[in-house]
Length: 385
Ligand code: XLS
Ligand code: MG
Ligand code: MG
Image 1: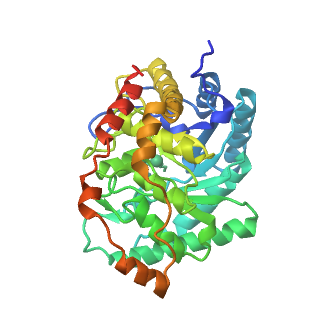
Image 2: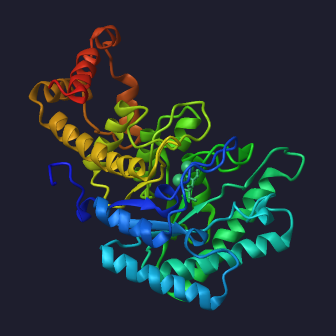
């Protein structure tokens, strides 16, 4: 059944293997769904109309697989991708599941753990390159602490820098042409994670040896957990030319990492996010890093995945409607002013500015009609306009 909200390859919707294969395990409860083999997950994504599948190394290849087992798994996975018309735009590495990473990976105190983390990431880069991935995500889930007695936090930053520099060199040496996308999160699974927000990474990236190779992968849930405005973080990343990837899902502020279906918790925030991405012409993957409620069987998982894509497309349509609405645009035009800078500094210009008279009270007294603008926006979102 095709309709206006039917996903197409051009929409670049992707899902992590770990998202639709999520079995509903949580800290208090066992899995509720049977394992979904990776090739079946690819078939499901093809059936749903998704464009891409992303993966951690061990979502596909078990950590203890032999080289022969690995090659067979990869060969069959590539065949499944081909058969179901699904590509692999992004790969990443699990530096958080295995117990060796209990004290961190790139930032761990034990140099053997740090070396193993780099070795594991190089193998994951090999795997992703073989599958055709052009973005490599690094989420440092264990790069943090429960107690800051364990190390100086600036040592952790230095170790992280060393690791990313090493991986950039590997990228060059292998000719992979990956762009790395660093993903921030404030906490969970660690009590505190060092790189807590996208902004932290935007400050870190210019300190690297190859800053042009490294950008960010902001995730709705992660900034929202911290009570931050996600679209503002995305906008800053975009402005810096660093929005290399994005993780879409939903989340209520101040909670554990909920990873809800896109738009499920705050459709209004999702609207402003989609509007931003579409307005600026972001053309990277729209990756859903979310999972179905624990109440669901695999039919529910399909409903979840369809819902993520459908909600994105509905909000995209609403953003276009907002942009085309004459009443809304009239308020925007009257209220927004423009982006004209105050002007270049010069001694003369500064003297002129110092002597200019501003009618402060009149300017301040003017109503901006944002109440009306917001209500019109709400009516578009609620579907009556
Ligand atoms: C966890 C992260 C994780 C990364 C990939 O919260 O979102 O899924 O996106 O390792
Ligand atoms: Mg997450
Ligand atoms: Mg994520």
